[in-house]
Image (tube, rainbow, N blue to C red; front, top):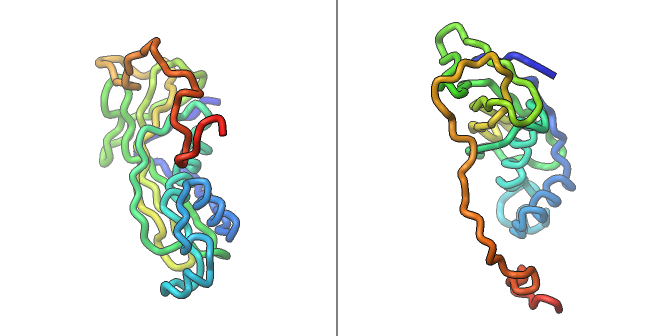
Length: 194
């Protein structure tokens, strides 16, 4: 599927029901065992009306919003968020986004305030990349839950001119002397093979 995007384009909103299960599962999956994310009574003792979502779950939902929109070839490069109003069970988180920058091998493609030059985004993986920056907000019944920006790399079709290379990934040295799996330390202080 091919789609043209420009600076200022709005992404369709994504509504996510905030369930008790989502809050607890997100906290467990991110190894955040703070009681305010799974124990309603202890959360109330600490002044909260109920358990609430942790930042890592919100971070993951913001990333999901972007990759669900741009597709499986999209690669998240940076997710920077700030939390506001808490997400409590029974509410709905509505994520919205707006493209604030497009850059390809040419640098900026359509700066804010000018007529946007449209970048055509298409698969498959391996074509020249476009870097898109999206301003994301998420609101619930209380107010603004999250504000942030996401930078994502997208494959582009051949209609973008090439003037300079855009680094896509960092090249890491490869070593042949990797330890065997049984020689690696076990997680959580457990003994390997126990």
